[in-house]
Image (cartoon, rainbow, N blue to C red):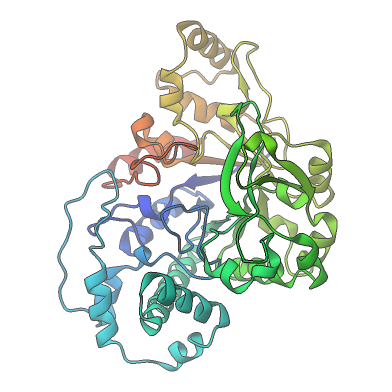
Length: 443
């Protein structure tokens, strides 16, 4: 029998907080303690890059989101004297509440040798200049914020590792067009002579979207990236490897072939272009083991992409909600060993929300399937967690919402729909989670 490793998916912003949004403060440490006590090996946190509301469209691959600074830790470091709180809720409070405290801390800060060294980092300097030019922010203040973020994150990760918890960080495939990445590295993107996008990223029509998707991010000029020995991408991966224990590589398919769409046309007008393939990964794996990469190989993956994945023995992914065939009482996605099997993820319904939208006959068929497997429980989230554990996958990752048995009001994101509830759900306490996680831990 295969020994399973277990993980929990919870974005940083979804941690409980007195300040409107989860951060690198004491609640993050408390969450790690809960995972450690229950022998959960992985905490998957989704992207933490600086972004303009869309986590998968970073402004920089090296700068972190300033909302994740812990005010409590600023106080512990003597940079603040007293702070107020925000009434907690199940959704992030977007009010720039923390900003006044950041500025107070900046005034009280005395540069240290560590700060002076950090402030020389080329990528951080570029990001600070970008923020100064585009968001009217003081460059030195931005460098200070990034120093605090880096320091607080490093301390948090060190604590997690001391508790035998590995951090899984998510690397988005494309940055935002208006970003430090594109501004300072324009030759590595397919842009016009005037610096504008001619093509945007996306996907063709598939089983999930019959019109395809336009993501409106710039696409890479992989020929120029390869000409420079892939340094632009290698440096990014090396930075992520220093920051996380595992990298979840978003949209792995693009490294084999990527879909580009003329900017003024519909997604159906796009074409595929070759990615860097083996040449890139042969070079990257001089710097890390393939076991440190979880590759997102979901969706319409063709034979050549699977061949690329398997050549390096990369750990792939499956989402049970998408792979289960209720009518035939089988799960088509959990038959491999070298995968991470998710019950749901940040882009799907919660398992309770999904179940509530099934027809009477689908629910009955699902219950029969679960009974035959010995997985049936009155609470569907528990039954489906047990079903995941029955798969051949070596790693099982469950979202906090599914541990708690929450409906779709708690889902993280609904792709293709603009909503104030996207990327906004959060916990108000760990009380119920502490109780419910024990079921998963004992499986």
